Image: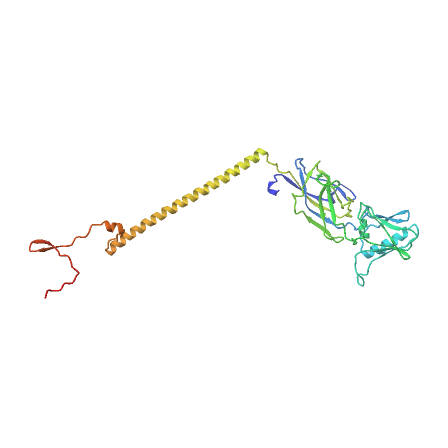
Length: 365
């Protein structure tokens, strides 16, 4: 679809700083102009989102420590972490939460003297009970530990201690999949994503920077609208549906509302096909007439040139004082009458000239 097919549209500029109410970064705004109901499609044109949200956020910072039959809830403090700050924070946190007095240590290879694998090694000081980590399926807290969401990972006995290595490379970058939801959006998506206006994939955005996004396929990613009115509600979540808190940073959205072009009916379509066929037929006939006229013109020019050549030959012969040579065929020569000998006149008598005798004669002796 091209913009030239759109006959009615409206562009909205959404600023979360002008919200009426906000709860955990779900912001509600009132549009200061009328929104007509016949705008049946919507799409995100562009977005500016501050990376003021944390790597570990409230609501996505809970995991469980398993010690034998005991399950201990561990809450990671909200904030941004590096490998080393996480190592020095979470290790003591696990030890303090242990119901059995176990000491937990997090190891990470020295990148200057050892191979960098991007993974942690976790150690437990006791082998008295089986210990492990359990990560919820509905958040990404396991990514900073190096494990998949929704998994249970047990330590293995290694001498006098138990150890557990990360399954995956650690992720200490801000959330890279940002879903923008709108209460008027009715998308044809899987369950849980039907109100998603757009999804933005940031490329390793650094903390406290800004994500600037421009939609390269505005009409291809458009969604249908539902219950469109002046009061609109937007929210920003991760891929698990957990709210992303921008901590006061303003989110700027540029949203397009438009009326989709009417599809031609079958009768209109047939008329369009007939008109097209008629146009192509007329063009072919016109092209054929042009070719015939050109051919006749060339023939006329050739005839005129031949006549001019004949006239020039006749004029040239008159100037030279010669008659034009008449070419005859052998048949015409044979049919021509024999040439008579010239007549000689002697003393008033008319006698025929003697025939020439080519034989030589000798006078008598």
